[in-house]
Image (cartoon, rainbow, N blue to C red; front, side, top):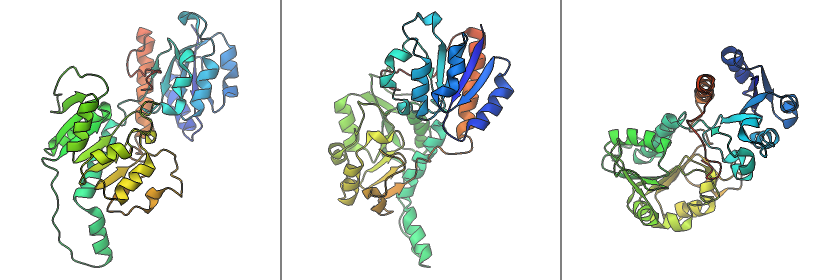
Length: 340
């Protein structure tokens, strides 16, 4: 069986992808095609060869729709064998519109590749507020000697809403600081406490209890229709006035106008936000004008390190090598219906 690799991206990473794939995978694929529009893959589609599809950025939606349009055929006769997403978040591909195209086609993502660095950002966010970073910077700018009381993280309660790989990586760090962590899951957990000492719960009542009791609420929900603007005025009002909200999952899961009001009105103590409903964050967003002592705002850069792309590329190369041996793809799979 002849096999082709189609690499669909609209970013500047294409040259790096091609150098890595040609170096490590050229013996496995008949051709490796880099493209940013569906037209770039016409020759691959018209061939009788099977395809593995690598996607990044919103253009991946169009590539999936274009190359997986033979969904009416039996699984073994379909063109695309499986798909890989460079990113862990897959809402950008609008998978809900591609259920037919993706039926019986394994879709893997970079889940876990960025978990440790995002966990570091969670830790940084907590220290930013409890060590009052903005106050030290302001005092230095004024040449002012200003000793003040710090606040310990030890013993503080953390509620992680959307407890998956990133949540587990965060819990590993948080437990080392002596914090009490509760993970809220979508489905019923198989155990009450995990290996990091995190208490696992699910359901509306438990989630509400966690929101009311936590000193830090960490939002790591996936971006789906079900979670759209999930964190809103009602949920912010459940939190303690001293609570800090940390958002590192998907921007569509929060109502930013409600968050801005909650910060301005003192409903919650503060927030650290790295992901937004619209990116770049519009100039007219009220979040820009929230003071530094209430908001730590970063430009979706919590996972933006030199290892961001290479780690995911190495994951893909590993999956291809495993597939070459087993003709199966069983790990890091996404459910197109759920969207994660």
